[in-house]
Length: 455
Image 1 (spheres, rainbow, N blue to C red):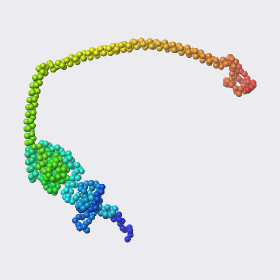
Image 2: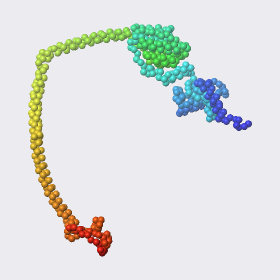
Image 3: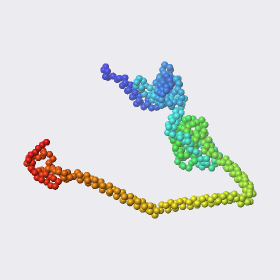
């Protein structure tokens, strides 16, 4: 047989794993029961086995199991080898070793009923969604309720017991019953509908949800999600009185208040007895009348003491010391005013002298004198500058005259120009028979170059 026609180990394992993963029965939340074996608690993920306890020892099947850390944290007891437990989870294949395993997400000790499992599942779901917030922060009950709504069965002693207790405590409170089924398949829906009706009414101060004792199965409607959400959504405070003293339902946890039995729920709704309140009011009325009478007597005695005082017999003595104080203050005020007037007069005279000193006429006369002095100084300085400038001009004129070419030519010097009137400065500019002009201080003369002698 050719190798190409064979499956590899990986291919076969993946095929088997897909069979497990797509089997709807193996992938739903399975519950299996067995005895723990090979269990050794680890820090995070738990790996162990589960075997049948009832089968003969040579026929006991064993399945490997794994429980990851996030699910292990929810286990609220200490598992041990040999302990019989119930596991919830799914079955799949671990490809690395080709063995099928049970992936556990719930672990419970044997002895937990289906009702208890359902209770725990519903409790965790509702707690995560905040349905139990009223129990942590209950809304206050009306101390004098006018109308009380009660959702309970229309039959039985519970209803009559609650009516009797409410009438004894507060005969003025009106009680309205919303009859409902309290057990059976339709009980949860009926309970939720009546709770919603009572809340929508809008005229009730308090809502009581009640039923007498019963088995776990009888109380299952009060552990349903629909009833818990209806209680949590109620716009008025809810008192839950379900079952016996030892029973605790999800309805109790979702309500604002929990009564151990239905009768106590009625007592809680009418916690103040009307007759006791009337008696307390009468006692307070009598006490207040006595207090007022005592206060009037004390006030009369104080009035007699005051009327016999010297204040009323000689009222002038009340203000003698005050009048003396007024005289002292008046004298002090006059002295202060005299000092302030003298100080003000002195300041006024000082300001007047300063004003006269800085009067415009005086300032103008001072400025005129200063202007005259400045004009005289300016004229003197200008004369001095003119004389100095004249002397310098004469000196420069004399120097300029001594440097004049005419002065040099007057001493016997002359210069030569050619026909183009250019000055001849060198013999290199002349040729024999050139016509030149000789310039003297008193005129010019024409000449012809005969011979050039160079040095």
